[in-house]
Image (cartoon, rainbow, N blue to C red; front, side, top):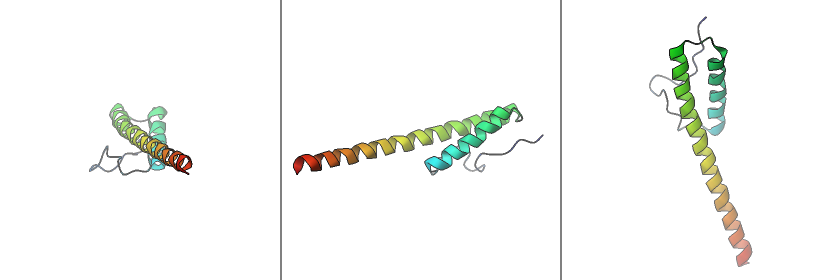
Length: 84
């Protein structure tokens, strides 16, 4: 049985830097399903795992940026309340 091909094009096999958080999570869920199915050959699983690692890094980066932005907004709000 042929395994589904989930990764990006050959030109950008691991580049996930332009994906939104939601897109990265969606792709990650799909490739986890491929790996867990047991139907993909070992080389494909390793390639999918590599792509998954890039997607996880992207998700962590997006979440960290969101955390920093929320903290910045909260600090500005606090400063406004204490100044006024």
